[in-house]
Image (cartoon, rainbow over all chains, first blue to last red; front, side, top):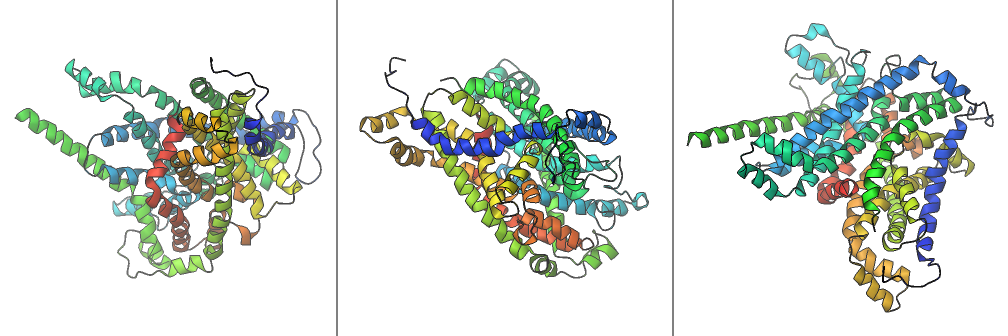
Length: 295
Length: 279
């Protein structure tokens, strides 16, 4: 504070910011706000939008597909904050010790993350294929061929099958974040707990896990946001079908807006999806920026 | 002695489980590789687990030529490279401003970038679609290039700003005393010191932009301009009955990101963790 100099406004930071910030406002923040407006219109993509108040929302809350999509979003969300988080943490704990071949294992586990979701969707779509796909082949090989499971055509199974593909892509990412988090855990604390007679599990439960809690919060928020962004896999594997059994809000929005040309209605779905996500963005921001913005 | 033996035995079991898990983890990739060198009729008639009676690279050739990968893949680069360069340059400018100056509005600007990077894409789809149409860039490379450049500013600015703040201010202050202009301090002192973070972000952003599906789906209808991701979706429709071509095409589509990953793995991982572990 002693270094505070008397000076008129320093324009330098504004000059650095003007172009990038203008672009971001124009293509991200502005469009976000505009979606709120569109959700109150009957826009069909061709004629100009007319203001119709909350009609789209009234209709949406009466639409059974909306509830199917919402329930599937919950399945995605719950799966994402459990399976990849537990598996990623377990792998990070194991690989953080000097297991032979740790480097190769790490690469193998997060290699799916570099694949485009479209590629993952096509590979899994093929593995689930009822004729010639890997899983049907395995069922046949172990004498259960009679079951002839149509993995992606079974309304009860389809969402879980797609989530499995998404988890395959996600685990390595979570593992990487936890491995980075473990770098910051002071090994002497663990040694100290050992001296006090703590078992492996006790050391993990009472020393390591609390120390990892900042990274755990980040992992959970990222997992929630990623789960709500899921679109590509569903688009490529089922287009939301059979019927609407595997649709989520993101796909429901796309279909209404771009296939049925009900863009105002699509915008209303997007706003609902935004409001759900906003809760988690807010948690992340208050956590991250409250520490990040200390000068 | 016995205690030691049980420990090593439990270790051996643990290792075995981890190795088995890793092998199972790679099954989808192995499935794809095996499928790509088999013939469709062989798989359909005899099942996936049968020993193939013939191997061929025919489906790669099919996907490349008639499947259109030969023009979808270059399109991906035409979109990715300019977006990547533009977003890195522009975000380094805003990161510099947000890391080195204290000014009215700095917090809210950072808040805008970070909140924006986490938005669900659906809230942006329709307005961006409309905006590209109004600017007459809908259905051109420019539509996706401009959008990626703008959207990725959020993540890049956040990560680069965090990194720049770890660079000691004395270095910059000395240059400032010597009468260096701000832009020269940025370009000749700050940027060289920020290169490790730029490399990390660039590696990650390359795969993200290259792998984008949704924006290409919304903004590019013209088959001749599609990048490889939406191109693959077209290929899927074209070869509905021949999965060997679809899978070979997928593997070809994945090749550039796999190469980048293998060469720059260290930066890729650094990018992931820089984005998440700060704060």
